[in-house]
Length: 287
Ligand SMILES: O=P(O)(O)OC[C@H]1O[C@@H](O)[C@H](O)[C@@H](O)[C@@H]1O
Image (tube, rainbow, N blue to C red):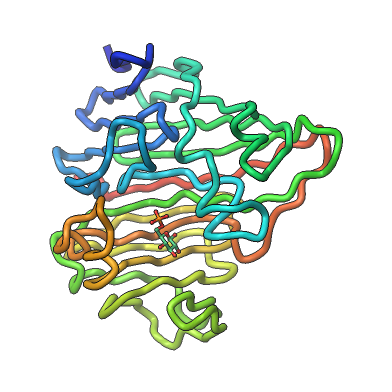
């Protein structure tokens, strides 16, 4: 039984659990279609704060929240990171299930609540989550069901877990421009071949390569391969921001690094009746 659905008191499907014949697994909450766990070789690869609200009252602090239709604050709608991460998605069932991979899909359509959010358009989002022995794929399709073009930014806010933030090394971002949100959106140039984290970090690297390797501990790499997303956000709140966040324990910034595939530096404009697709595949080495 590789796909298990779990209900809660108010949701027929609260959570979907995929288990691969090799033992790899992942869990997805219908709240935000948020992947909250990905285990390979018996090891958890995603960070989930122990203080995260998992009852659907606020976005989940960890895993892979899905940001749509606005990354950050404005200008496309009010609030931070859009409504997709705190909307309850419909579980559409198993799309594929064989010895090599299991795929499930989720859907979110516009509703009174999304149209009242300040982004008034008609749309359909389809999110595919695919598990193999050593990979986790998350693929988003945005369909414009409105009569007018829609404009959005979108991002997979992936929290990877690390035993120690000082050991994290992120490759393939050298010699790229980035927007530094810590320096009032100053455009900077990355000189380093390997990005390490020594303080609050909140950067949008522009036009990043297809695969960004993240060494989360010596010799332990998670590759973030993107499909059609243009940018990569690197975020760690560090000491003071972590202390100010109610759903992150004061010391937990040391156990997480966000490497987020998205199209955020420039928005996407999608004509009526068209579909835009993008995704990522996280992978670890086979043992
Ligand atoms: O606290 P939130 O809304 O989940 O956002 C967390 C962070 O998400 C990152 O993607 C942003 O670049 C940061 O600016 C932001 O602080």
